[in-house]
Length: 256
Image (tube, rainbow, N blue to C red):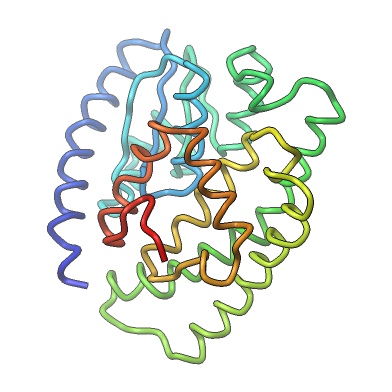
């Protein structure tokens, strides 16, 4: 794990400077949209890609979670009372949670309909996935990543093989649902057009790269789908995942 320290130190120092400047500007200027995020955070990456694809103009406010910048009283008071990312401040209005931010910006006409449909039937299908993934795909991928990569990095203690296998089994069960249910007959999760559902899901799955898990080995439909999502979202997809690629030591389009 020591080999990751220089990379993470560089990320932390760079973001600390940017966050300090952004907090100062927030106090002085409440007219622009400010986006607070950490590209090591899955939902932060998803919302970042969506904002970029939508052409939304925002003030860039990266937050180094590993450095505890979100845990300060200044962050809690001036940015997000829940002390989490991603979050926004829009003309003085503070809002947390990635899906809430997505729906808020969509209601303001900032998100194109091809990404988040306005027609209630199509929107409901996208919302169905966003609601489903919170306690299935997201939680199991995140727990696997945290247990295998993050916790050992922070504590120096490796998890037992039994615990890792148990978490992997739960994660692969949900990956199997994505493979066999959500992608059963369509190119994307909610049909043959990519939506925000695909972006949120892809960002969760990509996180497992850092825990040395290759989803493509057992899930050929997910493998092909990830290529389609990346192609549809680039160059923003690769930019958002730059640290995932660097830390995992895998190229974005590496082959099995």
